Image 1 (cartoon, rainbow, N blue to C red):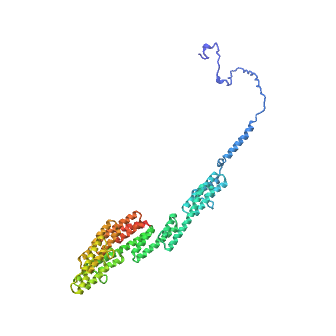
Image 2 (image 1 turned 180 degrees about the vertical axis):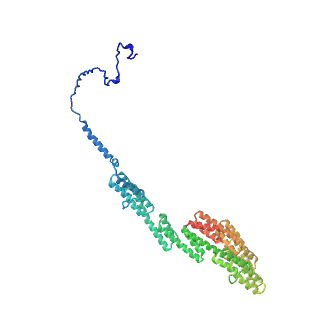
Image 3 (image 1 turned 30 degrees about the horizontal axis):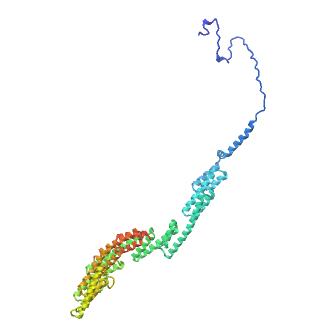
Length: 548
């Protein structure tokens, strides 16, 4: 469509809406006079009739005020927390620190309880302070339990009183209170037990179920920290250690060892016990060295033929010195047997030279050392026969038929007794006594002399049988018989060793099965035979530790 200035349209004018953006703009000045048209007058709107005004807001206002007031009451702590509380917060912080440090109560104003109560004075219903006081009560209750466990009953009572005041009682508070009362009852019994122990110690009664050591141990079983009981046990240990050292100073090693064993049984953990044991061991080594020297000297004198005499330069003196300290010393007893045997040999040589007085003197010495020696009995019979021959200075008269019959009966009876094992007992009917009775009638009776000399071998055979059957007491008797019949015989030592090992085996078995007293008896038997056997020391230490 052509524009408004198109020459082809100048003869007519087209209607237009105009520029809508300029509707409200002032009309351009076109040079023509302005015409203002009056707008038609508007008719006012009708006013409705005014009725009574509504008053609903007057009822709503009190309800709102009441709701706001209730909310303020319920949330007053929260609202109060919005306000600055410097003093209260400071007190609560200090109270928390005191509680964490375990300073629960006091009178200086710096304990947890005092500070929480100060906070309540500033704000009675403060939840932090109320909970803090409950925590103090719980801590006091824990301290009461701890003091009870350590048997500090007064401290436990004091802490429990504070806990009850703060917690207002409760089942746990009552349980602790009941435990404290029960412990006070036990403490009374404990005091009585300690008093009995002290009296037993004053009376010197240390061993046994009613002895001081046992009573003090019972007290410590009830109260491991009881200082009086511990001190009492130390006093017992000191007294026994002093006794042992005094015995050791007097040369009584056996007595000192016995006291040390007693101390070990009563107080195995006594502090001075290792030192005492070391002193005993050193004394034992010193004594053993001196004893070994005496034994070696005695055996050297034997080889040199210096069997007896005045002074110490002979075998008899050295062996007797050893036996004076150690009566059961097997090596010294064997040495005495060898001295006796040597004296009998010298007596026989004197008889060969017809020196009957010298022979009698030597046989008397031998009889003191080995009164049951079979060789001694034979030599005595020969000496008596020599005396009779010298007395009549003629051929010995022949025995009567009755005497011959009696000798024969005695020999047969002796042989039967030997087969039955009645070697030296019972007196009068033993093989030894009946052989001697036969020789008293006929001094050179070959059967009686052979039978008498065979008795040691028979004793060894019977020993083997008894040991195999576990009859250790019988084996011990037969060993003594062998020593008496054949003093100084080298065959005795293997027999002693075997018997000692059998006693140790029995002692070990008894200990394993709890028969401690039987075990100690068996151990004593083994110690007599071989005191230096390592098994003896080990088992003795075990039994000492077992107590009882």
